[in-house]
Length: 87
Image (tube, rainbow, N blue to C red; front, side):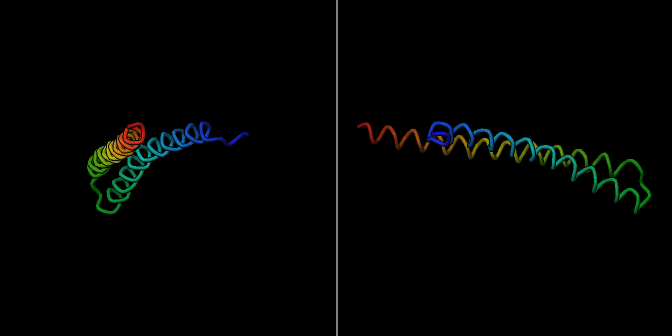
């Protein structure tokens, strides 16, 4: 069968990895865009672009770190559940 339990775990891992990549990229893009348009509005070129770009990079990595913590917690709970079932 094409979609058995083993393959679904691979698809789930692929989905999680792609979401983490999107979170990093979207944080950078949003930070850059906000800084760029604020620079145009206030005439402070390039300072707000640089500041918001750094904020976007930090936010992207923070989101990736949170996602990794969530994944690790989920795996630890699954391992604990499997160990409890074996005993």
